[in-house]
Length: 603
Image 1 (cartoon, rainbow, N blue to C red):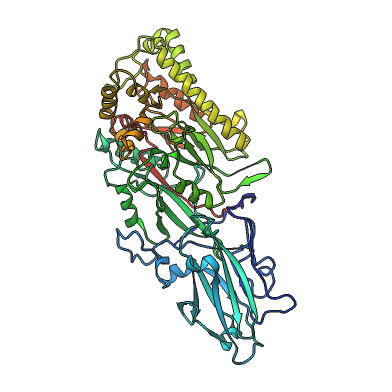
Image 2 (cartoon, rainbow, N blue to C red):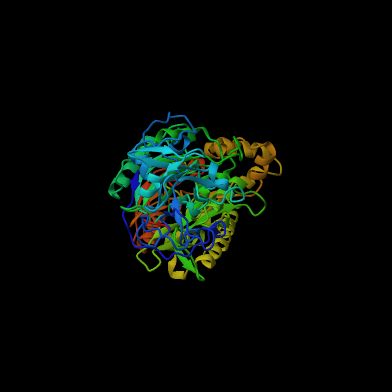
């Protein structure tokens, strides 16, 4: 089980998925014979001698109310590597001391005056009865509390030691809003109730330190060289654990799972789980996640959805997380999800949207990514750590800045220099690029789309111009040239043959869906996109080698990218992904994933 160190609390104003839930207390005017309590004030302990956990204990909302974990890890390492159901919560057993720490503590106040012969039963009420499991510790052993479990008078006099585990995350608030009502009922007719809420499954942000990088090998290009570059950059950035290489034949490690976390207060600091959420795509590579289960690590599979039709908008390259902020008297202490969709109708599946929104703490912000071939937010934006009052900046791709850079080079007499220094790039000079009206129009089209998305994020977070970072990037229209008009089928075949990554991203679509995707006139990076990079707090970024125009022995585009990051205190380190990932319409970020430290608290 993972414990996190305590850090200063963030401002706490957050809208949960459901309204506060209040449950009945003891009957008016009659004190219950047995009083039940949990960690209502979220200080990590249950108060049995004072009243700090008594007031408001029947309500579980944003700021108060006990929390319990969705107990989806495998503390005893008993789960078979390909068993997609197994987890600590899948059985009615407390699997060792580590598993016991995952139980939310519930106690009854010792009742020394309870009458001889009295008994009590403790139950989980309503929809939570099938989504949470209650245990009681008798002596040193834990046992499940069922409807037939009775507690004798001597146990009530000493006080019951209970623990609650969640059997799942919240998936649909219409079915279960995450609240568990635990009621103790004594044989004299008295009752008392405490409310708890399952901890939300939360996404990490780029301001959280990186623990380990994960990558999936490409079958094309020089992957061993990419791996060496990545390991070097990870090591120099101080990432503690070595790069983990996954197999499975799916090269886009960013797309098929998202590292999430859940945490609750505990006596020695928050008790936390790392939850690896599978994208709603049912990709074979996702089976590699199950052997990663263990103490403090579980896997979450989204129900239903697109089965083997991997719609690109469901990939988690299309999910980023805005770090914590407060704007317009509303706060997001755990940050806020950012997703992309095509305003024309396509977007993340209903299952994906519902599950993410149901967590209640990172309300999704939707951007327009329909103008991109792959359609992911990581193709034009990222969040960067910053030593500022906000603690982060927003970076966007800057096609206009890239064009201005090329114009300056041409004006300085370097127009004959090749646009790209990579051997596989088509022959084009800086002057040739600047004379190509279609390519220049592409840059303006991309810039306008980015401007619109920037306005959305700026309005949501209240960003100032000083908090915006612009990274030079060149785009080109791709799929629109492969759809419609004479020779469209042949052009489309050439595009797919040249871009295996695009083939994978379109795999499983019906012909009509594939045609719609290819007819959007979508865009992708002309040269490796620096914005599609790995952010390693506090001050490193792993960027795709630019392969831009070389003048006087210097890559002009790489120098501009380095300067843009350096201006906000970040050092850019470069890895070559041209033949491994760039040709497949992805970059360093698409090809990797990041396991980050779990923050001390979100509540």
